Amino acid sequence: MNGFLAFFIRMFVAISASVGVWLASIIGYDQTYLLSSGIAVAGGAAAYTATGLLQKQRFLSEHHLSRREYKYIRKNLDEAKPKIYRLQKAMFSVRDLPSLKQRADLVRVVRKIQSLTQKEPRRFYQAEQFYFSHLDSAVELTEKYMFLSSQPRKSKELTQSLVETKRTLDELIDQIEKDLYQVLSNDIDDLHYEIDVAKYSIKSQNDSQSIKKAGDINERK
Image (cartoon, rainbow, N blue to C red; front, side):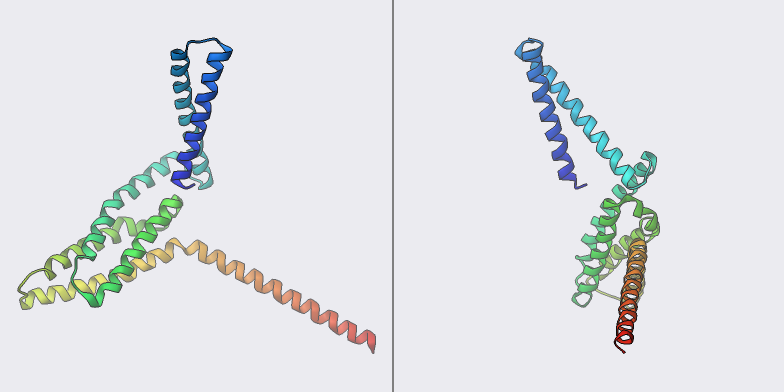
């Protein structure tokens, strides 16, 4: 569920509960205004917390995750955020116009992987290589490339290092694109299955119509 929508639902339930408790305290139990207000605030807070717990439990059930698994995944996703920020900053600090599109595509793919695993945490298990290896390598190589390319004078050794770093970074970009395909692998398999089912259904329908037409022609004869 969208984070803002989930928060809105919690607030709506909390406010509704507070109003109900306040009215019940004032009218039903003849409590003072101040005491009723305190009880209403406590009731609203309890309703907000309970709704949040129910939402979280429903989210975990939908994605077939235990609390321990979700905590582990959430920890790794949170640790990836500053790395992605560093990658974006380094990528767009490199003054190399020919590679701008490639760098923009890398950032787009990285953000897509992060977005997919945030919305559906179970996908994290299909992106472990990305989070535990490829993302760190991309950040380190990009920052190294940015640092080397910013030097005012480039010796032969420095130029060679730039070429090697860029070549390795290009290979890593290809690997990160494969990471995205891995994250989407189940969806791709499901799509192929649905295509096969649709093709079979169309073929069966066409065969049935052909048989029916042949039968009609025989009857006319």
